[in-house]
Length: 129
Image (cartoon, rainbow, N blue to C red; front, side, top):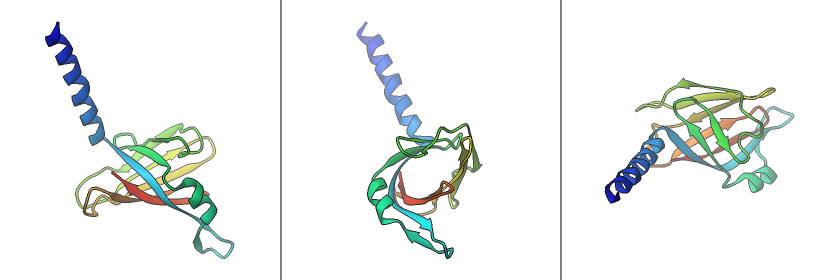
């Protein structure tokens, strides 16, 4: 009986470790908007609200999930460029009336990888692990 319980626990722990290999956990640092003159400017109000907001990005499907990102239900997602050494991970996801684009700069050194996410209205930046 103990052996069966131990085997079950090991299966759960090892599957959790594998899941991390196929997803990113990301945190928002800044939010930008395009002004009426076509310039990208930080939106201090949205940055204050969204800073620290977390979402996950699935490296196999391109799906993004979080409490506030995306703001609407995702109905379709895809990986445009898969993860790999020396290149960025790129995906898009869409809802009924929006399309969003995510790029994670994997070629950057260290555990934290910068990202940019454009959701059609705002541009988010931060780090993924």
